[in-house]
Image 1 (cartoon, rainbow, N blue to C red):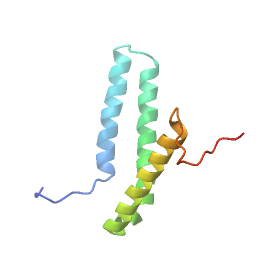
Image 2: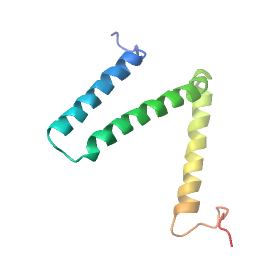
Image 3: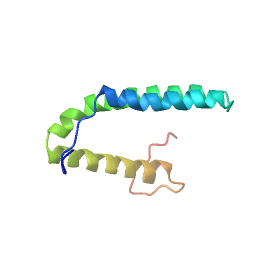
Image 4: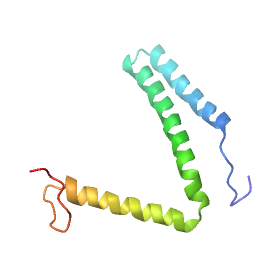
Length: 103
């Protein structure tokens, strides 16, 4: 692989990763570890594949839109995270944030 060049990942790479998960499931079962571990690993792996596939479909047009689209999404997420953490989750709400509490 050349320096500065990225390779696209495909389903073969996902299969290799899932093979490692399957190996861990078999090893956990053979060693008699907690009965929930193999099932949890498989569910987590399938959920991860589904979420990342959906995220790829959603964000692919955004990344094609250029650096300003990516910067706009980053700023939006930072502002939304700040409002949620500072206005809704903090033990003391700040008066600058609009209160969403029902009275």
